[in-house]
Length: 80
Image 1 (cartoon, rainbow, N blue to C red):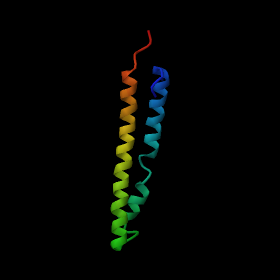
Image 2: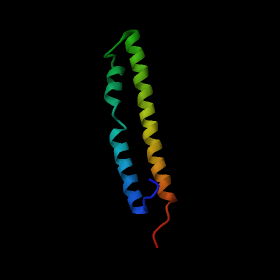
Image 3: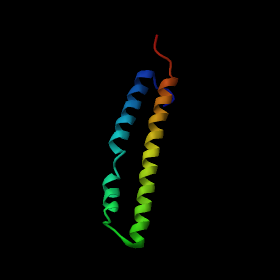
Image 4: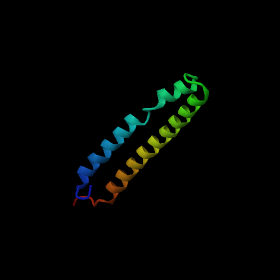
């Protein structure tokens, strides 16, 4: 992203935001199923814990990507 002008970076930031909004909920259905005891026992508990950790990590990474793009956009000068 080093040589992007402000308009190109604005487009990149918007695309990142749209993708983040679209994928933020990707693991919700699986998490709801685990909450409804679709898989029980020790293996199910381990899977559920890993799934929740993956969901948190995904959301954290998406948030970081949006913030990074916003910071980059804010750092670019306005066109005269």
